[in-house]
Amino acid sequence: MAEFQITADVREVRSGVTQALDANQVVEVHYAELPIGDYLLAPHVCVERKAAHDFVASIFDKRLFGQVAQMKATFERSIVLVEGDVFATRSQIAPEALRGALSWLAVIEGVTLIQTRNSVETAAFIEVMARHAQEGLGYEISMRGSKPKDFKVLAQYAVEGLCGPATAKKLLAHFGSVEKVFAATTDQLCEVKGVGRKTAEQIRELVTFPVNG
Image (tube, rainbow, N blue to C red):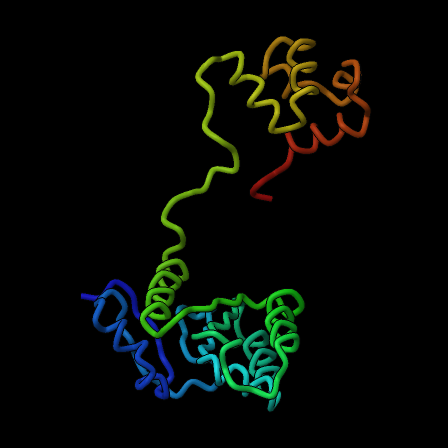
């Protein structure tokens, strides 16, 4: 039984992508006449797949701009997946214009841009994206490296989450423990040499910030 279900536009039946997805048996593909995009990976994630020659043609006839506008207006996450090398296609569009269109998508429109070599690689990307869209990453990514085992080093590690390493050392030397640093008032923090009021206020703001507020 497939792990994920996605919806593909009926015109994608002959693309080779859906056949590759069926072969992997991880994603179950349902077909519909989609008004926007080619694949719905989740209610909020839409993928517009374009073969390289179609991508170039859509720039030439300005179709791409309207499609992107519709995707952004409808979905939280819009992805344009280009299959093949756009610079290897025969076209009247100069390479500079192609680079400009690719940059426009990513930088100005904020659309995720993915380029693949063929339909098999496209299917592999869609499989991974469907997993992430429907389940997330599956684990939490740490914002910091592995924790040190030495308690003195670990104490500095904890305080560095509030300020830089030099300031963390000064705070621990002054207060003597992580608990006292976290409990210190703005005025008490300012008593530490090199800690200004702005830094002290930022530390207090972080310590008291209501993450569920």
